[in-house]
Length: 126
Picture 1 (cartoon, one colour):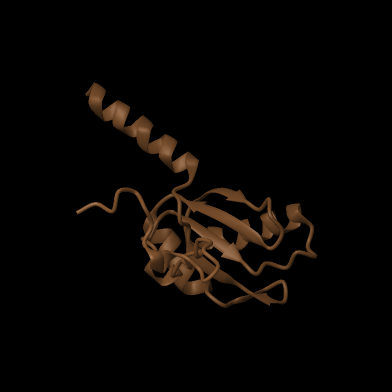
Picture 2: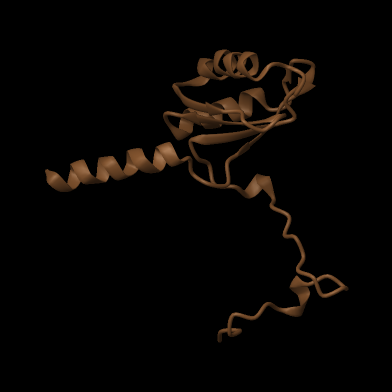
């Protein structure tokens, strides 16, 4: 039976505001994109991006690196096996004097979504 789109009372704080749901990163579905946090934000972003590429490309084809926010980055791999290997191998490794915190990304990268769509179009034409 549906709740009519209303939230249950256990989804609210004592003051009536909605609770912020904490995501458990250990239960994220493996994907091609890794979310990296705890990066040293005193390092120049271009230098950080280059060094992230050097570090992570040893585990597979790195398609894209986004490091727009200080201390965080998203790294897109060519396949899930490569991203999983990098996650397991580099978790908590010290990088620019700080331990890496690595999780799978919550959302699929837009570049992966586009590649999947193009692949579907090609397969449908055949």
